[in-house]
Image (tube, rainbow, N blue to C red):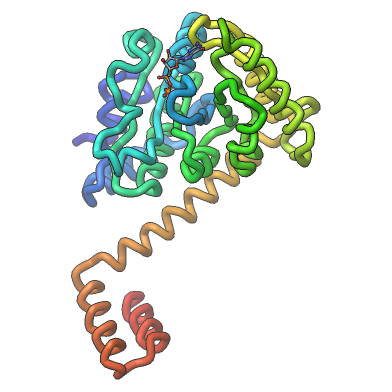
Length: 323
Ligand code: GDP
């Protein structure tokens, strides 16, 4: 595989090259990892897309929202990529976010690129690869990258580490359910969007939005927010209402953050996070070589037999690992 050629094609916006590049970064094979790292290095810094993290529990309307919102953006001439971090894919064996029938219209839009979640054994691996896929989409010149995740807590945290803005999608619900959203997730949100504000659900959606707007006002003001943020809005993804307002709200926030230095600051902090994550992973990989495994087994037998202290054995193991 000619990585330099692949990088050139990705930069030229060739979808097939982008898809192959993403397959490469998703691969767990050692030789692919080397090539993926080379590819990311060759692509280097590129145009910055607006990366939007989007989370919500199953059934809240994420795919309907992404389809409507994505089509609105492509209708404005913007190129939109959709990626997914799906923490359930390892459990179910198949990715629910990878369902081909979702986002049918958007997936056929030449200005859009949809990539289902990689199936991986643990969230950490999926997250790292998704971040690299985001970088490839950015290199391919996409204006907006939507990173979708299912709201189960842990996955939002990693998506927040690769997104510029975080959007939390909620369903209309009674006041009791406000407590159902974990505080940590609320604190991550830049914009809370209450979906399904249509038909019979409209009044409930309006009330839910007001509840969340109230809850957000009670939260500590974050330095990276201008006046009026984070905020709560309501939309109907199905009837395509409220979407231009969401887009304006997101754009205004990202512009403010750019002008006030928070954009660069966040991206720098994220780069640090992924660097440290990569270091940790590289160290863990060193434990997984045949010689390391053999040494570990030998020492753990000695510890089990009472011949060595756990701490001393561990220190010896780490010392030998370095040489
Ligand atoms: P996801 O699991 O979060 O991706 O949710 P889906 O987009 O698959 O939507 C789940 C269900 O909610 C589907 O039956 C949608 O038709 C419905 N739905 C999504 N958005 C809306 C909306 O704005 N209004 C109404 N009434 N239903 C919606």
